[in-house]
Length: 290
Image (cartoon, rainbow, N blue to C red):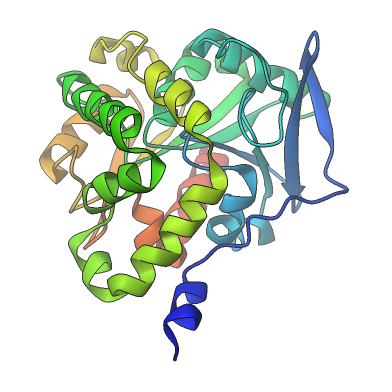
């Protein structure tokens, strides 16, 4: 296999669907979204590094059983652009507006990394609209979020000083597991870098990374979230150890933690099928007990 072919193996189809709707959520705000499948809704939340099309490779099995909705945040991807980055509260309002526009009464939220903070905030502010939470590689630590925000600040400095390709080189060994790094090799690194460069502009990354350092970091907030919550954590996650993951889950009145072996900070990258099976079992059990 040539080097170019090897890179293509790890490159995602990030093309946008021409027939996908844009849903009005606030005055002059329209969000690009994709909806696949039928049944109980799962809505994915981007972590400022992802776009809606990215989720297709990691939710395909789920879409056989549920309705999967993926969308671009305001100021990102193909959604409306503003001069000023929305606040967490405005992103939460947009999500509820999206659900209203799609006539979804309530949904499971599937969040990754920085977007787990948005999932938390929506669950607290709109508990009747959230059936449950799936938090993959959460930034919500049982002692707080200081470590994550230190990493975010270092990423912003790298981005400002050296640009997006060097930022990816900085981040890659931090969010990709040891096993995935070895297995993918240089071809995987280059293919994922091309996907990363295609999904975000420097301005989007600066805005997202800056917002991710804001908001309430008090772990006690989690004790107020009553809906079922699944934490999926790679045992090679740079932010949380398995011990910390179980401690975090214990803060939720109805929380659990599943450890994914040899997975990193974004565990569904390492094992898409295993991740989706964990989510499916969680939702099926939650629905049976509802």
